[in-house]
Image (cartoon, rainbow, N blue to C red; front, top):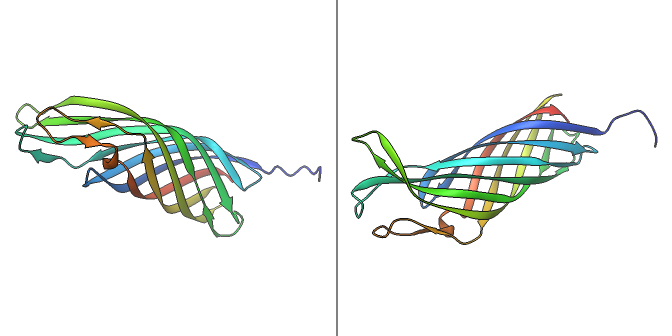
Length: 178
C-alpha cells in the first residue's frame, strides 16, 4: 500500500491523420503531452492542425482551401494498460480557429480571406500497441464536435461548422514512461 513503486508516468506524442473537411480530403498533424496516473488515466494538453485540399471556386476565379487548428485539455482513460495490446479513449476539450484561404498560383501567394474561432470537443478511441518499454503506437479514430461558425466571402458558398464535424483516422506515436 505504501511501497516505493511509482505508478505515475508521462509521455509526449505526435499524431498524423486523415479527415474530410468541407467534403475535401484533409491532413491532420498534432501533438500532446500527458501525465499518466496509476497507469490508467492520462491528463494533459495537446492540439492539432489541419489543411484540406485546394479546389477551384468558380465564383472567386481562384483556388481556395481551409486551414486551422485547435487545442486544449486531454483526459485519456486507458483500459488494461499493461497488456501488449489495449484500448484508450482520449477526449479533447478546447478551442480553435479556421481560416478560408485563396490561393493565387500566379504570384505564389496565399491570402487569408476570413477566419473564425470555435469551441471543440473531440472524443476518440485508440488501439495501443506496447512496442517497447518507452514507445507505444496507437491507431484510432475520433469525432469532432464544434460550436457554430460561418466563414467565406460574399460571392462564395459559406463554409459552416458542419464542414469541420466528422470522423478523423489517426496514427499516434507515444514516447515516454508509461
